[in-house]
Image (cartoon, helix red, strand yellow):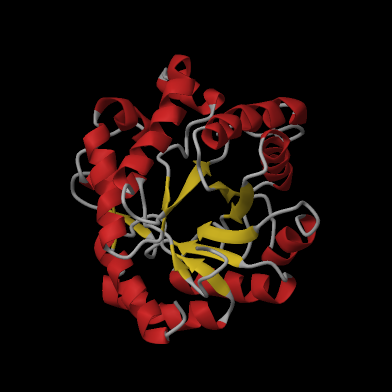
Amino acid sequence: MIQTRKVLISDGATGTNLIQRGLPQGKTGEFWVLEKPETIIKLHQDFIESGANIILTNSFGGSRIRLEQSHLDDRFIEINKKAVHLARQAASGTDVVIAGSIGPLGHMLEPSGTIKQKDAVKEFRDQAEILANEGVDLLLIETQFDLNEAKAAVEGAHSVSDVAVICSFSFDRGRRTMMGVSPILFAESFANMGLFMLGINCGKSLQDNLDCLIELDKATQLPIWFKPNAGLPKINEKGQPYYDISPDQMGEFVPSWLEHGAKVIGGCCGTTPDHLRAIASAVQESKLT
């Protein structure tokens, strides 16, 4: 599908939607892979019904080292396997593509932190191997901010599978990551690492993310994966994050995303099925599907 379509729609947010559906504060989405699989399936299905051609497995925080923080590391293999199975179940009977989501480790690498590069490669390799063996169509290394960690993730993924790999950075300081990486530096650093796509996800405002997309589009010949937040988070009276960019407002940005090279578009934090429906509608109107 990816090779035959001009533009594809990825899904929306996992974490913020699960919180809205009752995920307890302090619990990770991976917890519900085990405890409420029916809710994970329903979220996947809601995105598919809203127009998603690609859905992400609920395994963003599924590395062994990150699961330690939730005392779930002893169920590392089970969680990653089941995350793929739930996505497959949700997509049954469709041609929806399954992307295995791999997020940051949650700890800094040397010299900024204590994790050695070779240990990071192993952590990413172990997760990528499970996801690939369970049959994902893509491996998505997302919300990255550090060049060394992202390279460790790409190396780990390539070492265990021939599945196409996408690497996506979060420019959470506007047009830089928290480690000072710009879209241009990202593109230059990963130009020869055998990636299927480069990506931008999460980040700050819609305009900030568009600025990063424009910069990345000028710096790479690779297709671009683009999943910005639905604006910036705010906190409601219950202490829960919410995003005040409406579906219509998000849909209005779609023509500019397409103009500047986005091949796969969706949304990150705050992006509900309604937001995704507006995005998919705007893509349909563009005649680029």
